[in-house]
Image (tube, rainbow, N blue to C red; front, side, top):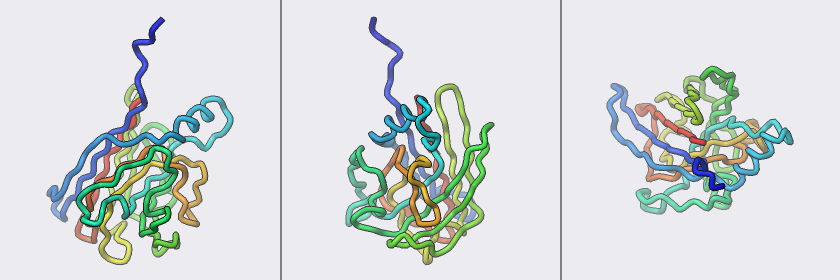
Length: 202
């Protein structure tokens, strides 16, 4: 019998840049890439082989665009980390969190990391809201104007939702990527707030 209800896991990503008056100054949205390893992670989670397969961190990176800063790089679904955490390192920002059910999340840490994975400063103001509707999960990450600025001004061009597998916030490890999106440079400083909406549909 043909299963007419079968559909792939999909992700939808958007990022808004807002000025101090909450006016939208930049916006981007597109489907994201669900990574190959995420399927194994989900199977192991459902089968009880591990308990770390849930999403537990969000990362912004700086190497997802080409040299022009306009065109985003193609994503290999086999990747396990952002471009800036790989062979061409660059600064990145991690928000480490724990879902507490009913749409709530406890944030364990927010940190600015340099290209060597060293934490150059923790932030305190950004938030994550989680909403479950039917078979979809939506994450809304609001990054305050005073957070995720690195050493002053940062051009972000890639983002990931990561599981708790291989996560170590203290050493700048985001965890294994579940979903990833690259995009043209979004400029972040202390006058810009970011709102990222990420929906995963099963």
